[in-house]
Amino acid sequence: QVQLVESGGGLVQAGGSLRLSCAASGIIFGINAMGWYRQAPGKQRELVAAITRGSSTNYADSVKGRFIISRDNAKNTLYLQMNSLKADDTAVYYCSLTNGANKDYWGQGTQVTVSS
Image 1 (cartoon, rainbow, N blue to C red):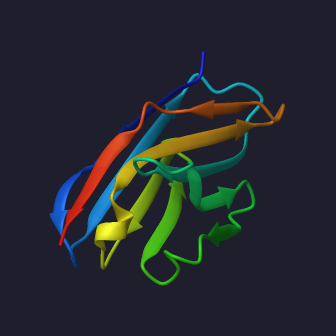
Image 2 (cartoon, rainbow, N blue to C red; image 1 turned 90 degrees about the horizontal axis):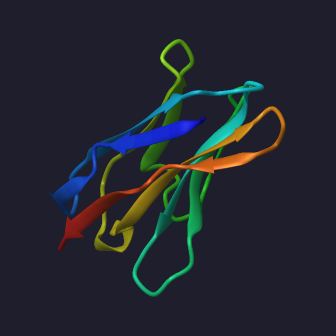
């Protein structure tokens, strides 16, 4: 059974930084892609950043130049380095994984709160 466990969320002042981690276990059929999504109160869940098996990355326009997604394949861990945080970045951040059978899995989410 695939498990995704996020950590690293918290409260930070605007302009600060946080690093989110997502540890994956129980993976079957390998990993096609992993990503970070977020959902703010009253809003739909949106893609923040994603990274493919071939290490191609894509970012939401709102975080380009501020956030960096990366993977440690040996540890099956996904990271999101978030810099220059803004109040609009406040949301619950979710880790996602798409395996080689194109099945999607989600973590439980971690709260990020940016105070202005």
